Image 1 (tube, rainbow, N blue to C red):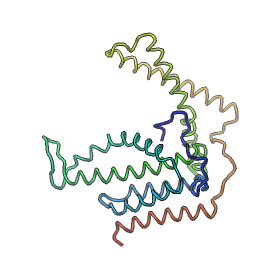
Image 2: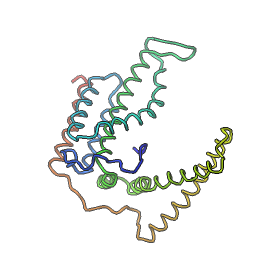
Image 3: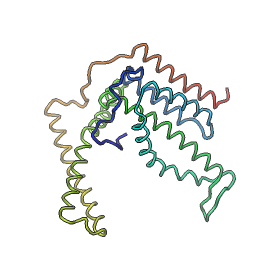
Image 4: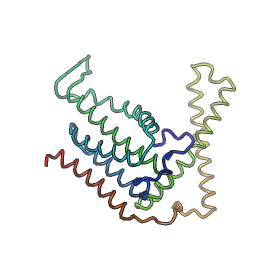
Length: 258
């Protein structure tokens, strides 16, 4: 969810006081993972199951009082990237051919797959953006640590979040320097200039990363990021997790036809 870093304040709705915000970070992470896996594992064409999940997600959005304009903007930005990948499913063979041009053909099977995958992706994006809007990144990392995620992976995520703004600022500086030297005036030479900038940025990031790592070792870094005091899951967390598991189970039973 780093497509819209901006000022590095992802959790714009983290200061609210709602039942969702009062859950510990690991509970919110588990609820999001259960929802995403249940949605993604539902086979093609089971719209009633996704309608049930969408209803549960709408209730969660209402309880969390998340900013709808911000949520919709983020989902729209990410959906543009996801849509480029999903458009290929439209030309899947099978079913009745609705349109054909040479080797390309649109079939009923392709439309069903495209609609199903798009709806699943939309639900998952909304859920994950709801999580990042309401939970600060340090709390998310702490929740991942409490859930026994490999410490090295947590450290990589923490470093990426912490220093990606530095890399963005470095690239912006290089771009201004190239523009001030009139290196990007000709469209023919822009590819070479941008390629050189990306290569130089890679070298600089590698060197800076090594310096940062050496500084961390000098300050006592032992391979694991420091964490705050443990926050245990209470009765509200167990109830919330049970409700999410129940929602996922109901949806799966619905498409099983039980």
